[in-house]
Image (cartoon, rainbow, N blue to C red; front, side, top):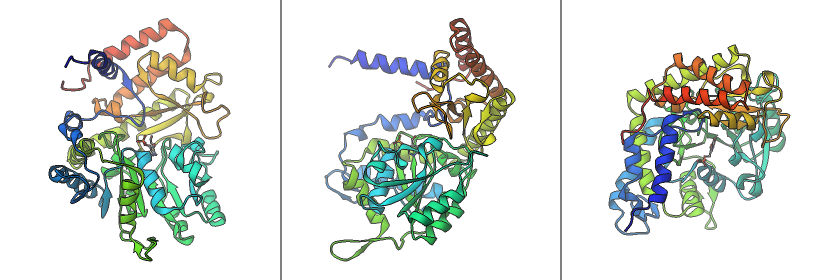
Length: 426
Ligand SMILES: Cc1ncc(COP(=O)(O)O)c(C=O)c1O
């Protein structure tokens, strides 16, 4: 067969784009060569509907071993009692939890999308908001932190079946204990979506939500630095009292409900090549070097936030406890939208994403904010001394987002700098 030069040329160009730019998208990272190798392996050829030891296809003995290994390593990483590594993505993991815990139309409570929440936590265009009744809590305008009082008020008044903590654009630690208290009071299930800070949590740098939540979901590809995918975990409450009564009248444990909500509830055959790559990434995360890496992610984020503040930018909540930050552009550049800022930065090979800020005066298509994160540049070896330099480059672009000459000279600087931080062994 002739080589598909069309697609491999695209892959080559994307590889070049990744190598030459400064990657600041908070949800992205660069996986190791071993993670890439497992993802590109012959395991992609195998159908394995079901779970290890209970498959609907023959010949699954070998992939059973890698799926079991992925589960065991993930449990060890977070001190979990149960895990499912099959969700194809974070949204799929969340969907399975919704399926297991609620009936269509049931109420649940999550962080407002416009205040940092995720689509799958109740957006009206997502399954979560379409099939279930989404209630929301906000961050406070005064300090940009979660409004726990409002969360408690809504929880007590509406008595949702499920309460969700976790966000896509929130730079502070969570008070899980406080949310668990109100969940217990109203007999709700407490789920934490730790997709963003999962790596920092694995390294012990942020609180482990498994100590407080009934169910924890995650993606595996953000700070955790694994392949694109999701997972579900349970900690001390397993097995738990929130079983559902089946038509036969038996109470099913939450673990069984979650397993069957993933498959056959919302997915078909698991991606065994990705599951093997997850196992590789979890193995990497169990090593001491991963803690050092996460410490650097956190140090870099703090240094970057400080550099932004020193240049007159407003950071929502004033700083960061984790790997990311949300910049409100209006303080320094009242007329600059996130959309224009994102485009100008991309032209300079600095990748970030426009983001609504809490109480934004602009739409989700324009936005007044930019979200930044340090996991990817830290993987490339950058230390905190480079953060003021990166912020200086960003500031140079944002001061004159239409000045092509200016952007060209920043791009040359970016490309020259990134040559010193090699990526990919191949
Ligand atoms: C908090 C949170 N949950 C879930 C997801 C969804 O993950 P995925 O894109 O893998 O479906 C994201 C993605 O950004 C996220 O930030």
